[in-house]
Length: 191
Image (cartoon, rainbow, N blue to C red; front, side):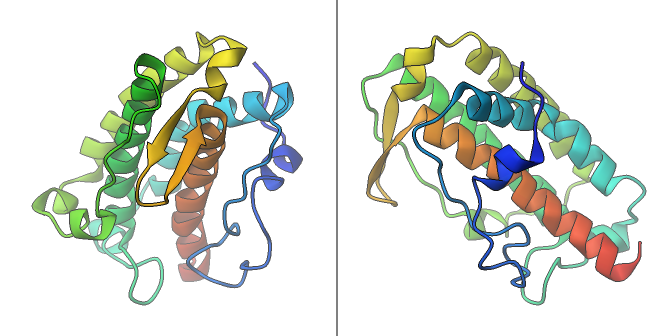
């Protein structure tokens, strides 16, 4: 496995939105064609994310977890629960693309999901779920042949066909994106 190099991940993000609290690491930009190094870095990001997330939320009180990461934004608690929802969908999309010919995936309304009752649960529920999702995700992608990363699914909301290489980069970025929401909140609040 290739160890995550910051410069490799930086190629997957833009820097024009850095002052924007919604995009603390910039907006996602896929890098194509994908190199072995970039694919390995994305896998490493997926694999290491649960531990980095646990570290980011370590020691936060309920009041801190219920603080929005930006005005009008989700709370840190909602971000953690969103990550479980999103990454669960991410793993399912990989499995669909590996077992069906260019399936059309089902998008979901993440903002509507963020208002449901499970978003008030203790974050340990979603941290445990994320541990399991990422363990399974890494097992699947590490067993894939190089040509399988070209398999794809159709995302009807984005009106695009997305390869598993693109999807892997997206979720590596997504992990860092939401992690930065929490770490930047902690930095700003001096927690």
